[in-house]
Image 1 (tube, rainbow, N blue to C red):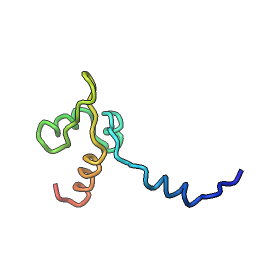
Image 2 (image 1 turned 180 degrees about the vertical axis):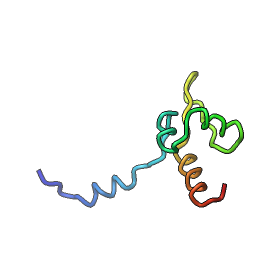
Image 3 (image 1 turned 45 degrees about the horizontal axis):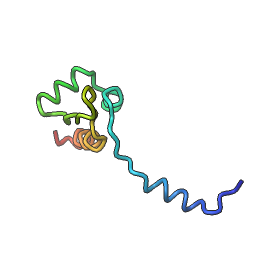
Image 4 (image 1 turned 135 degrees about the horizontal axis):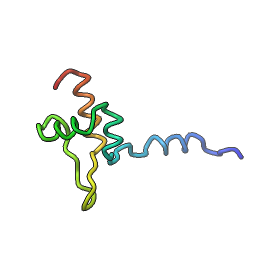
Length: 77
């Protein structure tokens, strides 16, 4: 079956938001820090704070993590 409008499908994918909430294991995988280092950075104010997403669950905004990584790469922190 051939797609009649392949460019429309591609555009739809590109407009899909990439902002997500990341749980701790994914944050650890992205930034290469251990759990204790992530939470130490949160306490010191050098790492983004998580957001409560439930009574016993927290997650980080992917844009906050991306920004934190970009600052490290640029040497601004």
